[in-house]
Image (tube, rainbow, N blue to C red; front, side, top):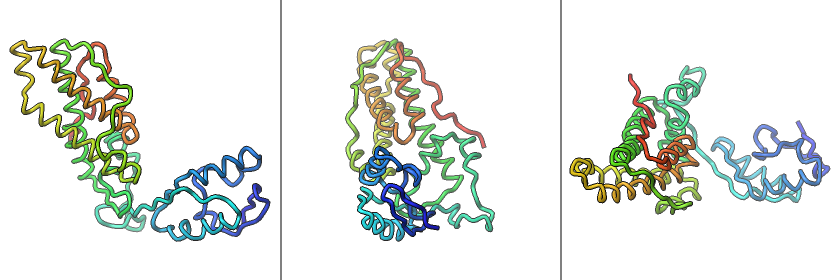
Amino acid sequence: MAPVLPFIGKIALIYPSACHVTGPSWSLPTTVGSQRQFRYALRNGVDVKTIFVRQHHAIYWPALLLSAGLPLPDQLVIHGFLTANGRKISKSLGNTVDPRGVIARYGLDAVRYYLLRGVSPFDDGDYAAERLATRHRQDLANNLGNVLNRVTTLAARSQLSSVDYPAVPDAPPGCHEAIAGYAFDRALSALWDILNRVNQEIEHREPWKLLKTGDHATLHAWLREWANTLYCVGYWLSPFLPSASEQVLTALSATPLVPSGALFPRLEG
């Protein structure tokens, strides 16, 4: 098949299913404005492809663009294959996984977290229901959700009405570099290192004892410190877990502060 490219008035013989631009379709660039959009998408775009078609998009597609006098995509990101329990996902093997059922059980953010944190952006990755359940329980419910609930509950019980936050918190060290390099697993690891530190500080300082002794001044200073740290995590979590990020920021911005409840409810079975 030879699709007509009206924006240059020529015919190019290509693999339509393999060599394409992520964004505008072939029928879009028919006006001067849409031609400009097409060129902008090429020049500023990021082409994300599987390793299976890397040759087409690293060699043939750029050659076609150069021959047509069009700009090349800004970046080409190649990701590996996803297996299931160490085996190739195949209909003949009967090991396909319906993502709708997984999302229905764990929630979309939990599935996003597993794929972004537990699967390498570039190497082959593996899906296993047991590992997803562990990530959900340990990282999301017992870590992020638990520390948010502890801080907001202590704030409510000690009558800390509100906390001031910066409009744009500083990104954790290494987070920008990881995101720029598409190492999303490292970016999330940097955020969870902060959560681990806050959890350890809470266990070490034992703020509930100050609640009993009535030392609210010291307790409120600690809570403001932890709330600001959690706000930073919630803010920079938004590209990865948008729903959880919004819930974290909303809970910490409430006036007065109230217990957040279970951000990621614990699952049975």
